[in-house]
Image 1 (tube, rainbow, N blue to C red):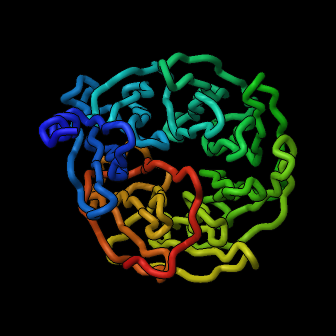
Image 2: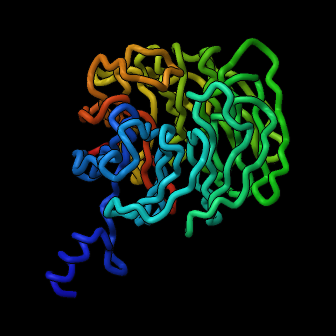
Length: 359
C-alpha cells in the first residue's frame, strides 16, 4: 500500500485492513458540550469535538461514552439533547437514537446490543433501560425495571444480562436482555444512592458504589440472574465510579467528595491504598488503558454536589489524570473541558495482566 494512500486513509479516519489503530480515550465535557479526545500512546489531547457546532446545541450535556473494541466507532449520551449518538473514528455522526435523559452506556460484548440507562439529573426519569442495535442504531426495546431513577448500569462480561440499580431506592436488578425478564434484589439498610457498577472480567463479582453510605457493595454473580450480596467495603466520602483492573486483582473507586481514588485488593477485599493528586477535583469517571498500564480519572472541578448535573459552577477547568496502575501514582494531568464526566475507551479483546511498570 502506497504512502499516499495510507495518508489519505488516516485523514479519513479509516485504518487499512490489518493495521492497528492507536487507542483513543473520549472525555465527555458536560458543561462545554465538547468531547476531549486523548491519544493514549502519547497521553495528549489531540482534538476537541464541538457538539454545538455539529448542531446539538450548547446545552447538549455529553455525559458518557463507549467505544467498539476495534476503535472504529464510538457512542455518546447527551442528556440535554436527549440523544444517543454513534460516531466513526473521524468523529462523523453515523447514527443516533432519541431517548429521554440518557445516562450511562454499556456494550454487550457478545452481541450487537448497546444498553442505555437514565441520567441522575432527572427527578423522575422513565423506569426503563433502552436496548439499541449498534450496527444501525435502531431502538429495539425499552425494558421496565420497576424502581425509580435507574442509573448504575453494566452488562455482564459473559453477555446475556444487564445489571441496573436505583438512585432513589435500595434496589438493583438483573435484566435478561433476550426478553427483559427482571430479577429484583433489595438491600436492607439506610439510603445507599447506588451510582455505578463494575463487573469483574471473569464474571464472578459485581461491585456497586453506594455514594450516600460511603461504601462499595460486592455481589456474587456466578448466577447472573440472582446476584448475592457478599460483602460491604467502607470507603472514603462519596464513592462514585468503580472499575476492576483487566486481571481482576484490583478494584479502583473514585471518591468524588474526598478527592481521592481508592484501590481495593480483590483477594482480601481490603483497602490497599489511597491515591492523591493535585489534579483531582471531584474525581468522577474511570477507564483503563487496553494494555493495563494506566487508570484514567476524569475530574469535574465544580462547586456543586455529587448529583448536581446542571453544573456551571466551575472552580477550575476539568482535568484528566493518568495513574500508573503498577505504582498507583498519578503521572500526568491533562486539562480538558468544564465538568469532565464519563470516559470511553476500547476494551482489550484479551484482558492482559497488570504490567510491572508503566515504562
